[in-house]
Image (cartoon, rainbow, N blue to C red):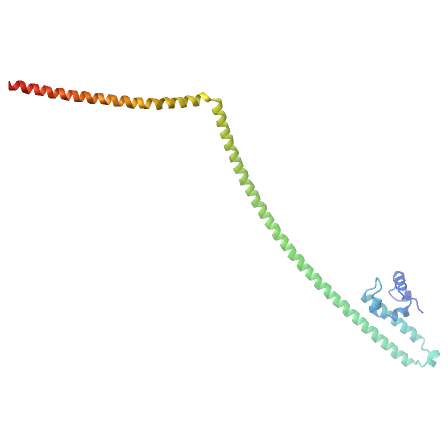
Length: 229
């Protein structure tokens, strides 16, 4: 049995993990399939394929080394060993090709995923920019509205201050307003008296005119009577 630590690419830590999972020898690893080996922690599918290929290759080399003159009694000839080695190399090449194809497929999938991620990031950035613009516009609008409300409130305050000032002035100067009111009342009272006096004066003038007219008529009548005599 050959220790797994002699296999290329297997360090002490990996050898310990393999040994803990029943693969302490090259022969044990060679007897596994890549799917079985990939179930061990820290060993992915590609690594499992590589380990199995290396283990089988090392096992085949070891078998080829044992096919010398001393082993021909077992029926193994150099030609047979060569064919076995060729078959092993063909199998290893097929496994390697499969591993490379899987790696290429994984690379393409990763690139496609990365491209989708970039597209998604660009879309998110565009949406964020649009939201930022909307926020800026809303901020400007809110600021303008606040300014209008503030100006309106200021005008209302000034108006209330003016009203309060007028009320205070009215309380502090009651005579001035009272004098105006009394004067208005007196004028209202004098107005009917003036109208009555004017009517009376007009009546007197009218009576005087009538009296003068009657006197004139009497004088005329007297003169006419005197002439007849």
